[in-house]
Image (cartoon, rainbow, N blue to C red; front, side):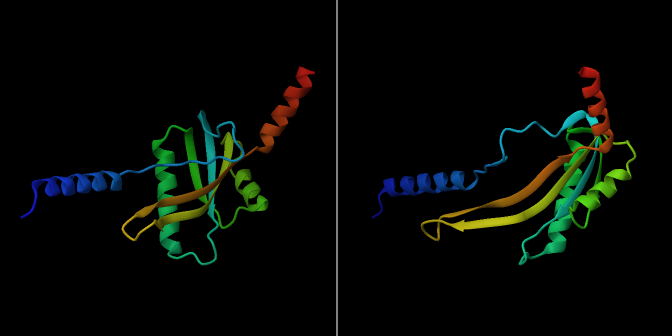
Length: 162
């Protein structure tokens, strides 16, 4: 004969496990920290992105498509910039970045580069096979580049201030 308590005990354990399974967290690490924000809702930005996958990366075309869709959607729906243009680059060399920045001819206030280094699922087995921790890891390197026209303006402001 089964005791009614055992059914309640099992139901409580199942409910707790279901609740814990649905939990999600987002962690952002900024190094070095603190830093001034790159976003400026009054500025226009040229956003250049490239990928730098690890050598054994799987599903490269799918990950690149997902990265571009995500970046484009973020720039369209967020209020980080007044307007922005997203361009995909083959690499993040200074020569390539400078060449792209030269094509905007002062139409953008900022040049932001994003290097996508990781984009994919992560699964960690904990103490037993029943305990699994997982999520999606996104690793980005984001930088702001000062345009030559801004350097000249800044130099002029220094002369006037002294």
